[in-house]
Amino acid sequence: MLRLAVADGALKVNPADGVDRPTARPEREGRALTDSEVSKVISAAESVDSGTAPMVWLMARAGLRVGEVLALKRSDVDMESRVLTIRGSMSRREGVRPVKGNAGRGRTIPMSDDLVDRLSEHLQRTVVSIDGWLVTAPRGGSVRYDNWRTRTWYKISALADVGDINPHDLRHTLATRLFVMDGWTVPAVQAFLGHTDPKVTLKVYTHVMSEDLPVPSSGHFVDTMGA
Image 1 (spheres, one colour):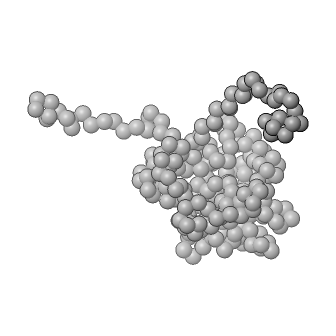
Image 2: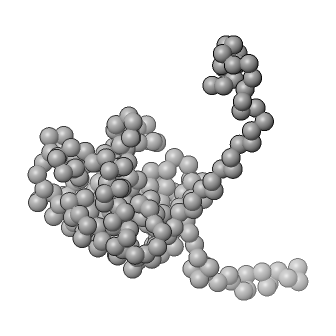
Image 3: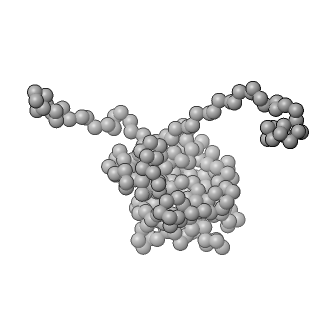
């Protein structure tokens, strides 16, 4: 802007010339929670606001992004087949937009038993909104992330008392569990989480602790040492 002002003759010199750029803040590394910590977060979500608690369930048990949760409609939940279809993501500026990958068709993933039970309960006791949102704001419209974070998530975080967490940590946690505990392959986790690049699956969403690493074999190369 200032360079343009100088070019247009509005300014004689650019006052920003020679000013050092501020140091960029280091990107926060995602955190993988323990099973106990996840349970505390889910319990806190139910206590703070049971109406939007399914959002936390969906992030913790299905690994959804916040925007994907906010864009879900009741029709995206198939209780008979016990699957969930993620078709879009709620943008703060653009509204619902197609998810990345698979030509924008979204992805369909299986739901865990406890998630099926919780969503079934939610669907039975909540009123259908005009637009069919799965989780709604108090007046029936779509949930705005900034409002939910300020009014609900911060209370959930404080009540759970598990340290510094943000909603996306729940997605990190599930991805790590799929790798470490459940033994899923990279392509399987990639498809489940909706990543277009497997490098993202490996680099960003896995947090393998040293105690989780397997012990290397001691005899594989022994027979070849004298060769």
